[in-house]
Structure formats: structure tokens, C-alpha cells
Image (cartoon, rainbow, N blue to C red; front, side, top):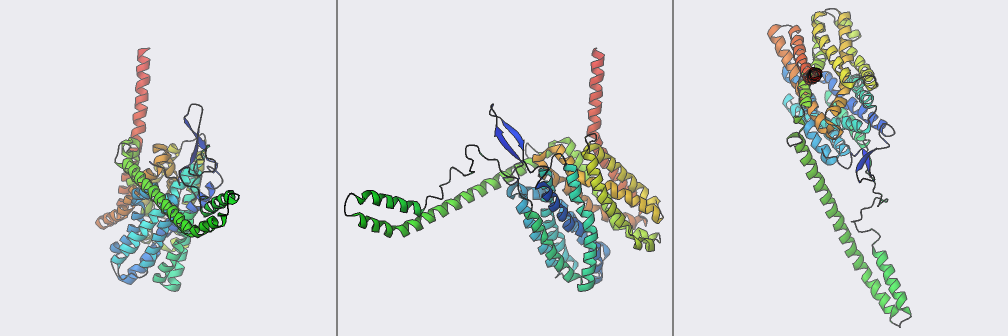
Length: 511
């Protein structure tokens, strides 16, 4: 993947053998890197937190438009799904324009989607303004926030990603309280208008995504382009040359005053002509650089998906994609269906005191941080921590339908919240599979698969409930599909273990 000049993370210097060696950038794992964590943290609050709190607006839309629950729920599902599904296409913008510009434009589009949704006349209008527009803007701001943290960290990547993604849990609380207050005080339309203004802070977060500096040329320490005409070549230099010529001619005759007057008369036209030439040169150079960047960005984005360097030739990465298709719905389902399950079990009073979804969100915050710390330990493997968290989550999904008391459901929700903290490890695992140079494209594919899962999973669970009149089968089927995704992750390691065993057996037989 082509790395734009805004996203270069290393300086290169030539050795005696004229080879390029990798020199870590001083901001990696420290300095401005923690500002990347802070920026990504607020992006998760404003995007993922607000999406987890859309249930507040969903109730308002049901009362306003009097449509079916299934049709109205598609507004939230579209917004969440499109945020993740557009990931591969956002990778093209990152390759071409860099993370900073992509995030700023995404903040503007997201804010515009919220504001236009305040004037919705029906649910179908919300499909376009909120589901598509706000979802697209969210995707443009979300992916750069994840990618930049990965670029700024090497030794503490898992911890940094864990800290930044805790914004999802904090945002779930903050945005729920904010939207409830705004809807109660000003109505849902004004609440969405105000939320659009709040979403402009995504532009601030994008501005904080400062690109790592370019390598400096030893032969050109000033960093100037030798091919560009120096700015000092201006009218002042012409004037000085003219004055110098006049001085040299001063002792040669009486025509010096006439020569100086002629130079002064020609000074204004020469200055205007010189400025026009310099302006034309700058415009041509900028257009040429932009054209080259767009061509390279699109070429490498295309080759990363369809060319000889396609990510789909990596078998382990393909297995990771299949896992992502089944994983995210297991995390989203409890948030959508637990409130109704609580009503079916007559546990509403206890749930009102401390909602089960709040338990998931709180423990989810600690899960991301703790799993990130454990994964960064020298004695542990990110891949092993990732797999153990997945196994814990799928077991919790299977057990949840068996619990009919508030205490039992609370314990299972705590396990779901903690084990789902593995989402902070997904960028790290993706980078280990494909490398830092392919992180933007690869993670875009992964979150696209998650978006498909989030878009189709909850409606599928509702369809199962309509057929069986129970949520038990919805969780069982979801758990089985999740287990299939985990099996895809285990295929390649099992093949490697079998190959190693065969080699040892063959070596022993030869001896």
C-alpha cells in the first residue's frame, strides 16, 4: 500500500552499503503519540457512543412517524452498518489524502447528516440523511482514528488501542444522558440539531491527527526542493542588479541617470510578469503533485484488493474476514434484545435501578484496558489473548438464555462486557497479519465485515423470535455461527502444527 507523505512513520538513512535502514521516529511510543490516543478516544465517544445510544431516538421516531418497529429500527442499523461497511473505500481516501484530511471531512459530513435529519418528514427520509449521510461521515472519521494510533505505536500498541477504544463505553453513558436530556427539554428534532453541532468536534479530533514528519535529505538539510525556483528571485534582486549595473557605469559616462530611470520605469511591469510566472509555476507544481498522489493512492488501493499484492492471497487474513462476519452481531444482540428479555422475565424494576446494558458497557471499558495490558506483556501473545477472549464470549452467549434471574443475567453480562474487550486487539492482530503498510486497507475490510454482521444480525434474531416466540434460539444460533467463525481462525494454526509434527516425524524416521 502506498503511504502518503502525511502518514510516513519512519526516517530512512543510507548506510555504507547504500541500503535503507529503518530508524524509528522520535514520536513513536511517546510524545504526540498520546495525543493520537486522546483524539481516537473522543472519536469513539462521538461516533460509537452515539450509535449505542440511538435507542433514545428510536423511541421518539416510533411516536412521531407511527411506523413498525422493524422499519424504524433499520434507521439505526443502517447508520451503524454503513459506518463499518464503507471501511474499504475510506482506505482509498486515506491513501490519497491522508488520515487528517479524511477525518476532518468525515466530521463535516457526519454533522451535516445529523442536522438534515432534524427536518425529517418520514422514516424513509431518515434512511438517507441519518443512515447513509451520518453513517458515511462516521466511517470517514472512525477508520483514521484507529489507523493513526497503530502508526504511532509499536511496543504499546495493544494498550494504546485499548485506551482509545474505551471511548465507546464512556460515550454510551454520556450520549445516552445527553440525548435523553435534549429530547426532554427541546424535542428530538432540536436534539438532533444540537447533536450535529456537537459532532463538529470530530473535525477537531481530525486536526489533532498530526502526520509524522518526512525524512530529511542530508544533502539538502533545509528541506527545500532544489527543482523549485528560489523565492528570493524577485524584483528586489532585479533592482539590486540594476543598481549594481548603474554603479558600475557611474564612472563610465554621464548616461547613468538615464539608465537608472529606465530601470525604474520597467520595474512595475517586470514585477507583475515575474509574479504571474511564479504563481503559474506553483499552480502547475501543486496540480502535478496532487495528480501523482491520487494515481498512486488509487493504484495501490486497487492492487491491495484486486492486484498481485492483494490481501486476499493471505489465507490467514481471509480466515480473519470470515470470523469478522459472525463476530460483531454477538456483541450487538444483547444491547438490542436484553430490554425486552428483562420484560419477559418480569425483572424491569431491578433493571431500572441498574440496567444490564450498563453493566456490559462498564465492564467493557475495563476489559479493553486489561486485555490490552495483558497482550503487551512479554510472556503473552496477542493472538492467544484474542482467542481466549473470543471463546469466553461465545460461551457467555450460549449460557445467557439459561439465566432467568437478574443476578445470573448480570454475571453473564459482565462476562460479555469483559470478553468483548478484544475489539481493542483487532487492529493489532490485523497489523500482525498484513503489516503496518497494509493496515488501512486490511482493517477497512475487517470493519466492513463487522458492519455486515451488525446490519444483518439483529434483524435475523428478530426473525427467529417471530418464528419461535423465544429469544433462546436466537442466541443459540448466533453462538453457533460465532463458533464457526472461531473455527476459521483455528484452521491455519492447526495446519502449521500438523506440518511441524510431520517434519519431526520424518526427521526421526531418517535418523
